[in-house]
Length: 169
Image 1 (cartoon, rainbow, N blue to C red):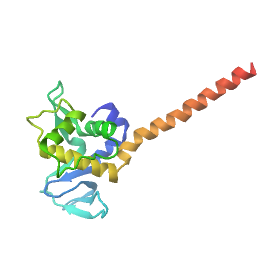
Image 2 (spheres, one colour):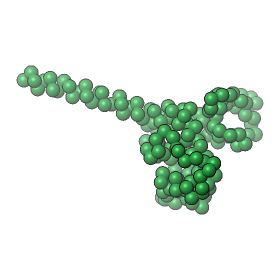
Image 3 (cartoon, rainbow, N blue to C red):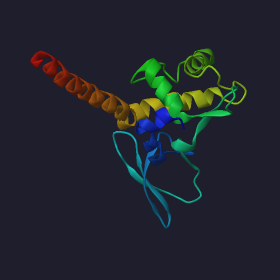
Image 4 (cartoon, rainbow, N blue to C red):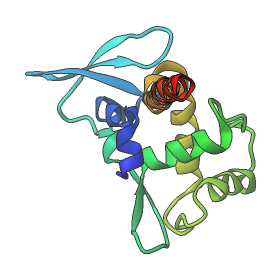
């Protein structure tokens, strides 16, 4: 994961998982003897016990294959790029979009993605996951904005005393 992703709330992706065979994303709450307790990222916030045999993919460990020098790009970096380009929500409808539209979407965000290893179903997941995370865990993206906003008033405050000293002299 890049420094840019680490400076945002993207490290929270270690608490978010996809469970094979279940739709949506889940926040990992705590491990138990019988598996792991998760909470769905939706309006219901349903808590569920996921058994030890279930395939759970933590989003922090997911990456997208590329053709460039690096073999893959962390999903967190892709999400940040999507935020820069598309804002809070991706308006592209996953179910009704053509394969060409979906590929063009990812090409706009990550031009070097490996077209032989990244399938249309993967692109649909990226869009769906991004929209879920943006809606139900906005803190993933908000940390960077908060730091920038906090830096601006500090810079203004530092500039004000200088102006006062000039007036006194």
